[in-house]
Amino acid sequence: MPIVVSMINWKGGVGKTSLTLHLAAGLASRHSKRVLLIDLDAQCNLSFLAVGLSAYVSHTYTNNGPTLKTVFDEYFDRKQANPDDVILKQQVRARAGKVYTKVGIVLSHQELTLLDMKLAREKRSGKDHREETGFEIDKLSVIKNIIDRVADEYDYVLLDCPPNVNLVTQNAFFASDYYVVPAIPDFLSTVGISQITKYMDQFNQDYRSMWAYAGLPGTYVETKFGGIIFNMVDEYGGGPKSGHQQIMTSVTSQLGSSAIFENYVTDGDGMSAAAQVNLPVFAFSDLPRSQPNAEKQATYMERVVDEFFNRIV
Image 1 (spheres, rainbow, N blue to C red):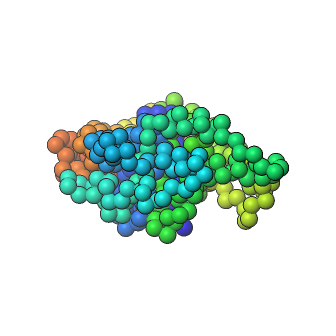
Image 2 (image 1 turned 30 degrees about the vertical axis):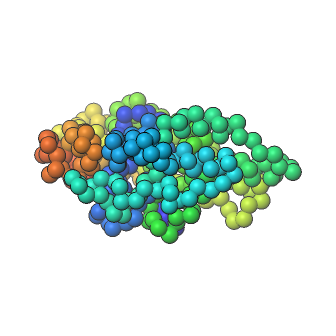
Image 3 (image 1 turned 45 degrees about the vertical axis):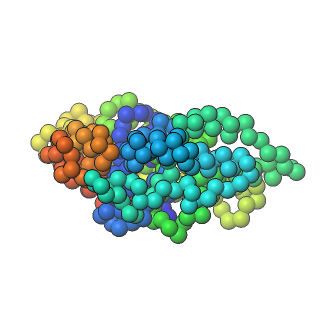
């Protein structure tokens, strides 16, 4: 079975999507792991970054190709989407003219925003409340079901979640073994992290109760807190500058030393330069500009990938 990880922060602009893509790229290239990316955000940024904007538009709109929306549409029609149709293989860009052979992706769709309202209205009648609770679990299991059907094909599944806790996001939590919080060392990025952990504790409690009440086999497996990865960290003198270090230290004191990844990603324009040409920062030698900054950020990202590999087990 793959290790399934939700990447979540309710604050936008923390580099969550870029970090998700680079974790997948690093796990594939540095640790030879098979990784499935699933883009749950209706903004589709992971999809754009991973395969390129023109390829995304061609697949999704010109050719009406399957996306995550297709998976949920099949659920509404009482069917199951075919994973081989929905998962794009060997299309995530690695370097100029090359792709990651071990990384697959389920693309997002802008209509996922409307789909959440449709999910909320979906009610299936059962012979009693217990059976109806089982139907509610089915509603939360749409993403889990697609992952389970390709469990032998991947070592990791990384879910790029939108900055909310709607039913599509709850599908990700329900399917996950861990959740990881990308953050930047500022007040707004970190103030809500303790609230995220409280929500996740409540979700685990609710899902466990629903599972038991519905009489499903086995037990509900809780989604564990995998840690906080700091991004866009300014350095001075070989470490985070004092203001950033103070915030990182404050988060550590609130949540414990094990809650924070020891490694982090520095600030700089290397990753944005890579994103502009739809490449990971690891392809710094292929970039038209900011190669030194990209090379530095690639080194820091490699350390984060290695720590992720050792922590999330």
